[in-house]
Image (tube, rainbow, N blue to C red; front, side, top):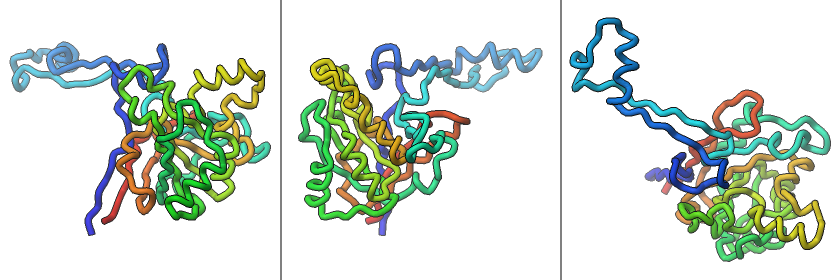
Length: 258
């Protein structure tokens, strides 16, 4: 048996539109030449010529949201309560056994941008891949956004998961879901148009807000889901431990034993 690990995470980088304007990460790189002055200040009398090849260290300074890059959202991000009135847990309180489980991939790449996936769509896809959900399965959704990563329209691409689709998964015992789109719900630009047409505020963030009923987490901005089989793999997505935060970054990976 051989083990294959597939990276499901995007880069943190300056020049790719992975978030709306004004919400992107900012990385300032300090290279081995730029850092010399700082290194010399730690050691009185040290000269640059005494350093190997005259070099200091490389470091990076980052301005970052907990929702930049591939990250795991905690129930607290969605609402102040979960499970019909309990206090929502924050990212440092998410059970770690939720974050290392069997993975299941639903392929919705054929759905139009802005389409809201229904429970019936989920049932049909599970039937197609001949799989019955098990408690704590991590369900990831492959959308049309995958092909737009690295392009300026990434944040407006792909379908989203509606309330009844999300609730269907949660009622089967799923507690972590994920998408390769910018968010679990349909992109805001599409939901905005529907809200303007209907005045129905329940359409806004309907997948996220399902956490009020049953607390759950989801992964956003995954990558390489098209490389995964429908099931038969593990997903590891342990979040960075940030006190009382709504999300934490993760180096999400799939593990396939073949």
